[in-house]
Length: 83
Image (cartoon, rainbow, N blue to C red; front, side, top):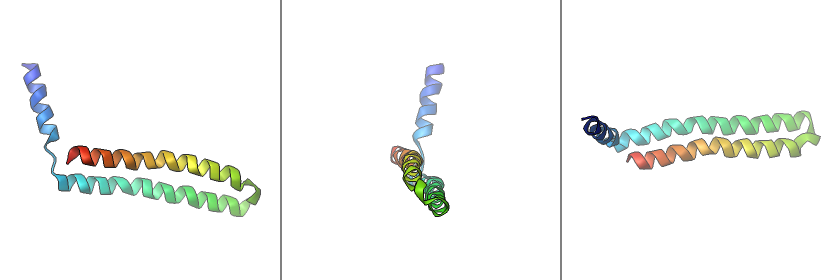
């Protein structure tokens, strides 16, 4: 009996309106967008305060940029899986 319940729950989880999935992805993309802005604004501020540290700051910025963008990529994959 539990297998039947799990199968029904799996079918119900897949039934998502594609429009709602698009809205969800749009809302989910706001976070990485803000994060990227904060990352590079910190690099600009740091470079203005200490120009000789620009190389290290840019290296850290690109690393954290990649990590933040993974969130957006996961979101778009989930959008295509849901629709």
